[in-house]
Image (cartoon, rainbow over all chains, first blue to last red; front, side):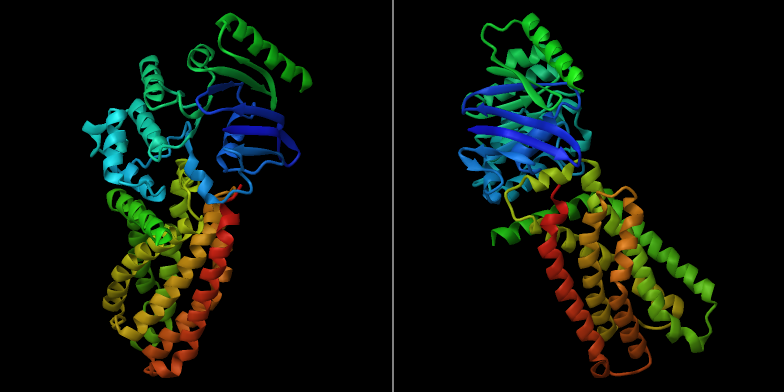
Length: 237
Length: 223
């Protein structure tokens, strides 16, 4: 569903991503680890169509992101560390607004359904500025899945969440059908990532340095692989 | 129709948010009213020179107070990372431009609805006549069309709040000339039919710059 081939991204002389290739089929969650500045957010932005690659390609469901029109954005839902919701609107107003932009059919019913799924129906008419960080993130997930996209990109959605809120985020993603979507998830939290992923990868120094299925992968092995990937990037630098 | 619905959704979002926060309108309105009072005292006007300076006062106040609103319209989205949410939506990005343009027009017009009566009272010259309102409306459209585009341009620059007037004011010269000449003529008692060249200039400016902004906006917001 998500295919990245030999992707390179440079800002001027600074190369942020080098020759990155990965594939996430439908029904799989790939968790991407990497230190700050590894290029995770840049990769997510390119896949989402917010930034153009310098070289290489990204295809979503076989369609090249660069050549596709705006319609391809309908197949992608994005949750980032910025929640992308308006504080001065209510939770319901936010979802109705984005539903209109995504031309969601039967919008009122769909908004009710999604608000129920993320447990925000009792607070639907409250301004988002009165929500806790966990509630805002739940609303961000509701916004991302409102149009039922087959591809979900989650860029450090667990940043700033306590363990309880992070557990709720995990439950939400399972309940909201991550088993039928292609999910790319970036995080700094190794334990959480291994627990949530079908496959893990490590991006460091702009290169993909490790990729493995989580089955049979222990947290200790993951930590070792992570330390090696970071050390390899530092040696290159 | 889908395009128009998305434009209107963005307008609805901006107006609803503004009605609750009053971030943009209050700054513009207070500035405009204070500027009006300052101009009134600064010029210490005598009856015979009112008509000479009043058109300039109108456009200076509209321009400076308008810049306050225009500069904030994209900065508020950018600072909270919300522009990305709009850019991710499956729509031609010019819908964002037109949504923001209509929102900015509404806010500037609301300020003008305070400003023109205030100027009329303070300067004892009635400005709320249809021909004067025609010049104000056409000038405001051109100002907002260019200002909305440059507001999007300036958010990615370092000195973004300073950058907007630096970019905007030189391009605004035709609007200011036509607006001042038109209102001056009307205050001097000339009929609107004698001032049609200034109306045509404003119309041409509005069409050219709205079209140009529509064509350029996608490149402006792209990384």
